[in-house]
Structure formats: C-alpha cells, structure tokens
Image 1 (cartoon, rainbow, N blue to C red):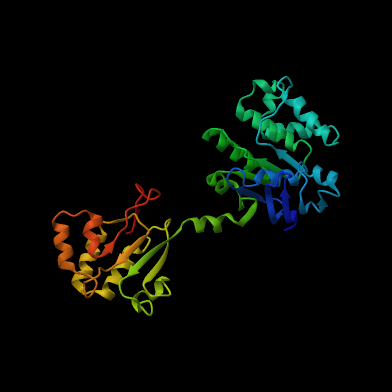
Image 2: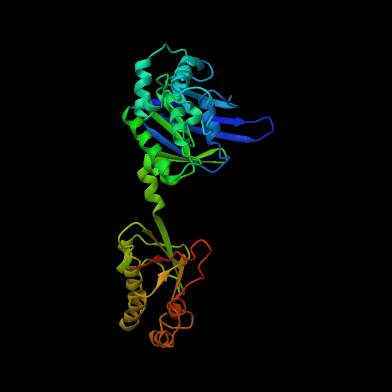
Length: 357
C-alpha cells in the first residue's frame, strides 16, 4: 500500500527553549485511519500543525503525497484538509457560502455538484441556507469538516474532533468518520479518549512529551491493554518452575523466590485459581490443597502480589491452623494469611477487585 504521509526525525523547539517534538518518525498509508493519543501538551497538535504547514519544524522532513512540506508546500497543502479543535466560523454567513468560499481559498474552481455531495453526506444540505450562528454545536463541527473537504483533499486531520461534546454527538462524529473511511479519505485524528481511538482507528500512536512512544495496529495494542501479571512470592527459592505447571507460561525470577504469571483479563477464565491449586499440590499435601481450593471460591485478588506460604511452617501450608482462623470469623484477606499474604489494596485497585476464579 502506498504511503501518503512520510515523517522522518521530525523535531520542533520554540525560542523559549520548550521542546514540543523530538525525533518523531512515522509512515501513514493511503486510506488508513490513525489515532494519536496523548495528554495535553504532549505534542499532538504541534505535529499536525507542522504537517499542515502552520508551524515551521526545527529539523526533520515531512512529505505528503511525495511533496516536501517546506520545498513544495503549495502542492502538499492542496492534499490536506484540517478540522481544528476550536470552532471558528463566520456567524453571519450561510453554510453554503462558508464552504464555497473555503474551496476558493485553495485555488479550486467552482464545483457546486461536489459541494452538494459533501453537504448531503454530512447531513447539512437542509441547512445550507442557515446562518452558521443558528446551528447547534454538532452541526457547526460538521460545517468544519465540510470546509476541510471542500477542495477534495486526500488527507484529513481531525484535531480533538469530539472535545467538549456529549456522548450522543461523539457517536455521531464516529459515524461521519466511518463514512469518510468508505470514501477512501486518509484520516489522522488526535484524541484523549481510548474508546474513540478503538472505535475508529486502524493504528494507534501514543505521544508524550514530544516523543512518539509507539505506533501499533489497534488490535495488537488493545490486546496488550488486557494483559496483567500476577507475582507469587515464595518462602523458599526454586531452581526451576515445577513440571506440573511448566506449560502455563510461568517466569521464575533470577533469585528463584518469585513466579510471574501473565494472564488476559478479558478471557472467560484467567486460570489463576487452577494455577494456585496446582502450586499448592506441589508444596503441600492433599488436605492443604483441598483447603486452598475451598478458600479460592471466597477470595478476590485486590493486590498485585501474593506471598505463597508462611514462614515457620515446614511445608509452607498449615491447613489446620488456617481452618481454625477461618472458622473463628476471620475475613477473606486475614483467613488466607496462612496461605497468602495479601497487601492492602492501593487507591488504584481499591473497590475494583479482580476475580481470580
């Protein structure tokens, strides 16, 4: 697939000394939708502004459709449409005149048939004679998109297209973007919302402090977000992962005192309960294993670490003592203390226990 945008080692430093971008490189294929995620001040808008020719870069190169934005800026600019984050429209002008005027700014000749097609695709045709000040916020954003598409660009930039809008309007914008995708327009959007990127993008890039931290296909990145790790700390070091659980993908620490288990939170079963039961079988007798499996039905995993076994117990598990404590009314976290030392949940995990069965 042909690349419509090629960015190589792009950087931007302002006179005040602020570094907005440093060493950004990426390629975007024609017809692709790319979402750029990052906090305020990460450099997303600066990157878009450089590509669109609004900001001069300090270093690096950018090519749009094979045209360098600095040496062949006029040809590159004709290929780009920009929808800014701020709504800035002439309040005393009609929708039709606003879009038609924007087309002329790019040196494109009159084409009322095409403009009608754009307005109809954005559900603006019935509003063509309305003053822009009479429109709702959602309709005004649609007018911005119509202006950006008026000169038939091949690339469309959407800078925070749903900033400050309600959920219903946000979903309307998603539908508009999906329609543009079907028309073959390459779209680059910036957003704070992971849900938005997941809904619309083919690839997701993460920018922070002016650096592009990653750029991955959406499915790959979302799969990583669903992965978590459970660390089981052992009283006695191991030289190898027990054979009975060797096929679970466990990772033994260098000192042999901890085992890490990676699991998918989106799966129907995490496999944690079965793993702990099998480990109990390795380190304890049948009675202790039975008690462990019984308790697992009552426990939730709120911390990230579990300490397997208790110091002072020869085989690591004292089922009788554990049963006595549990019968005396100890809570799940305390009653399990003979088996696992569970740290108090942090503020990040408190109130959101992860089921381990």
